[in-house]
Length: 220
Image (cartoon, rainbow, N blue to C red; front, side):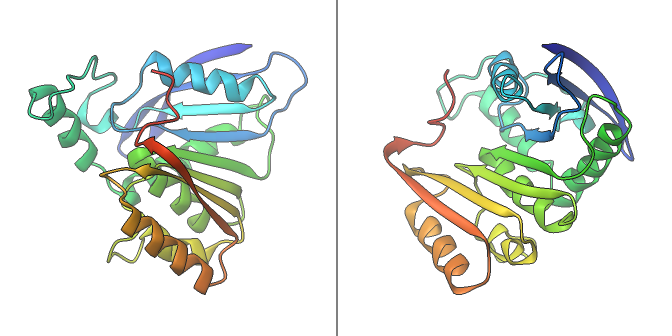
């Protein structure tokens, strides 16, 4: 496997991005892997390596670069702990247009890298970034072939770029994995998402994983 950490220029600075792909057999199809709220850490790099091990060129960008933050470090389980407040401050500092601007920069970089295949890509987002994966599919329909939101948050909002709305704007294959027990995406939201997608023309599947909590896909 080939691993690199590169600062990729964006309109707002540069996002430090972990890139991993097989050494041979390229060029490899691209996956944009959007981080969750606790930020870049070895756990996410390991997950990127797992995607890459089956033949993908995986890009894991630091979305908190505008705040000058790379890794948040250990988080206390206490919701009132200052480390949690810092995490949420960083999370709420982002919005969909910012991350879509970053997405354009990441794809432009991949287009110039001989190790990355040109053409259609996949996007995957966890927690806060599920909405980003779906929006990327809607805003770049000519590039994104598939998008996955894994226990994504903000799935149904009153904003025009809510995932349940943007899902109608792409023919990409969309997948929403949802936890049965999730304070950040309660079943009422999941059911509203599912109903909206079924009433429209989205190429989407909503799957509820019974008996699990938010974060169930992370090994740690």
